[in-house]
Length: 428
Image (cartoon, rainbow, N blue to C red):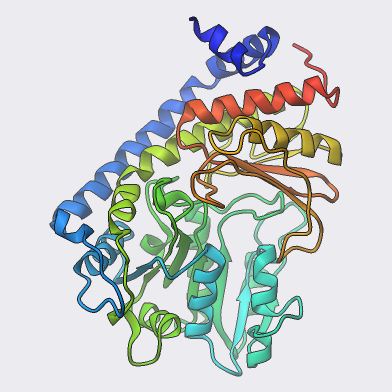
């Protein structure tokens, strides 16, 4: 059976296959640049594993308190090496990126401190954590205040505003690398470096924390290599490589990582406890595979950008722009297009392909959200997925794909679904 017939088996018509084939040819040069970064990061991860003498003994399970879990401790040493950091906390007890950020925030902020965001409003699920949206147990309830420096009208960083926004109470600056549910540019490591330099020039004791979700292994270096005191992320995104079944990480300066560990477990216990229950092996293997998995997701993002750019949609970032995370945003202009796109992504999934996603009132969000995620690990957004808040400007956010070929199929299936439902027309 030919490749053309295989795509037709998924309900993709010849005109879509031809259109997408021309798009793919036009972006081959971009793919070569992505592969170069993946090779560099692959060698970095491999060297860290060799330097710390990873062995199959590190895959053994621990239970109960998890004392003397050499697999857990060595994995954290590997993460610290990969991220060029003093220390790391890598645990299955961190259930999500939001949870890992919460642990880092509560571990290092005290009553009377102030948290500053230099890049505008943070991701929706952090609003309750901070207390922007009134929520039981928030930082605001614990006497931690919050302020933000909004981006300039063109979406760029207000560097002068950051300097002016720091005061005597400012204890931590939280820098969200990825765009969240906005269309502002994702921050490059170089831009993060500049923000940190400005903050430290005002007061060197301010903790600079980076929400690194979706950004790991996209560039040749990580925010800890340019001065970040803490870097936080989720294992069911980039660094888990699609194999981690749960978990999060916090890397950075030892004293700040230790503070987070005391919050995760208990004061006086910190990193000494926490059973891994036999999941160390997929955490190691997922990290090992992640540079290549991230490369596949990046190729899918560039492909999606080029496809919808050609059709006249506003895309963020554009297909020719440098990438600093794996997320591709497309302004679909109305709710029906958003829904049909997400339903097409779901139909291309290896798991639950028969399910038709619909918008729903998801906890932590202020409007209905649609999520397409036929994933092996629930909520894993390094796997092929798409989601969107159902509100103007009706922007859908596409990410993931454990392989480039699956990401490619997902975009083609989403496009075909939109054409079949007459929400768009294919004009070549």
